[in-house]
Length: 304
Ligand SMILES: [Zn+2]
Image (cartoon, rainbow, N blue to C red; front, side, top):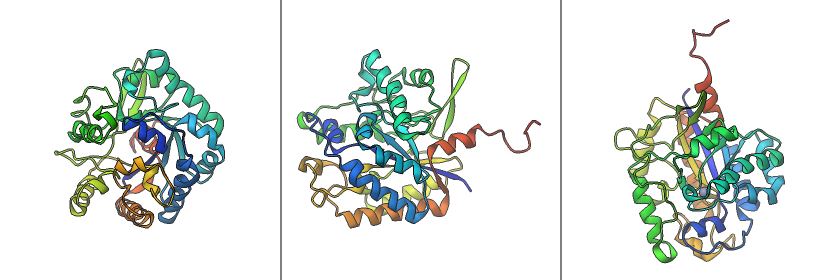
């Protein structure tokens, strides 16, 4: 059965608000205390395993939850140390800390090896892959090879305080890059890129935020086209997909984020439906297992 990588970016409400141009408030902890346990329960119900991309500095305050993620068979990966934005514009020293130190810290608190990285807001600079290779990562999951990326950034800016874009990687960088998981060579080493799933030809992105911003039939058609591809695909959630603005007493400014107007029960049903559709077409696995499958020699060519 073909593979679908599942991932959750465990972004705090505070880090989202910073992305929308506000001064970053104190983290309310809801991503770990509330969203991750709900995501784990939904994944268990549908028999899916996935990768949780954690902001190391926030994860360090919730080590029990981090260990629970690993205990229940999922992968922990790095979503940087602090979710500093714009990520592609950080100084070399700060960037190294975000990439290298987050790996060390997450390995310590999770007790598991950290293989994967996703840049905050998909904001991957030109040196990212070389830095990941130096830090010992096996794969990157920051690519968003879709024409919608520049439009998405404009949409975020239009909802932001002050209308500023908090990302700097060239608007068209990667838009026309490869859409399936692939190898990149850095020096004499290999690192894998696992882009967000897209449809063939039109490159419409298939990830959970789209389920809120598109009409239902359009999202379902995109899903059908993306799931029918031959290559492994990668489907992404955010922690806030498992939070309710009112019920969880969140900072009301998060209401500007897609899906935050929906009730918790509606969101959990939607998440479960999306996962069930994915699970009928593909085996749903952590992103590391996509890398493992690409790393394996093709059947029949095994040397003895
Ligand atoms: Zn993020």
